[in-house]
Figure 1: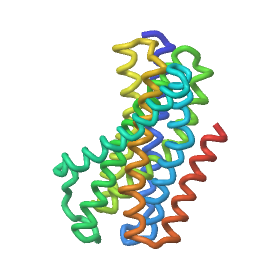
Figure 2 (figure 1 turned 45 degrees about the vertical axis):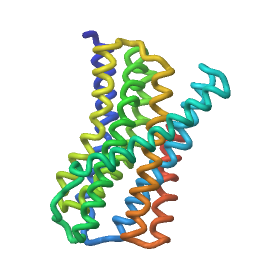
Figure 3 (figure 1 turned 90 degrees about the vertical axis):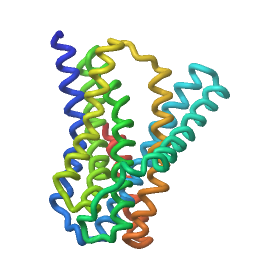
Length: 261
């Protein structure tokens, strides 16, 4: 394995583990502060909705239209977007045992299980989201490290608020700060995993078509979780103003992170 490959792996790992930086927020929060919970869950929704509609879905549509033509490419991207929504709906319905967790916090048992489920779904969605990001970071870095570096920095910056999105609902539902931190950190491991798998099975060649399809699918997954899980949770634990404030703040932070990189 040459130095270019090793350097690309290190860069991809560093970008992925930035989710752990966001997860550190639980060590500075009070589990009895429901307002922080409301703000942070709507903040997470803002992050995921913005990156889905402003970056991932438009990028997928542009690429697929170039490949298949305007009408057919647009149709494919829209279909994949709603298939992503359907997949999360089925996951929610078919795997209820995945979301069972003892009530270790001040929340009621019903609220606890719902919030824990939300945290798990967010972790899964972001792990799936981070997987193609790891592929993109690795491929750009292994061919030209100077080109991969700004991409890795951009991904690391928007992985930080994503780490917050995972850690907070896990923490509030379990009362376990280290568990919340681990979940946020592990969601970022999907990026180096994507790099490893693409290196082992594909080498340096991943089709633009495959990446574009995955982006459209992931956008649907993240929008569904935001609308069905995160925003209702924020509304339940806070008030309208906190939900709106967190939503706007999440969009703003993600917008800034995309602009400056």
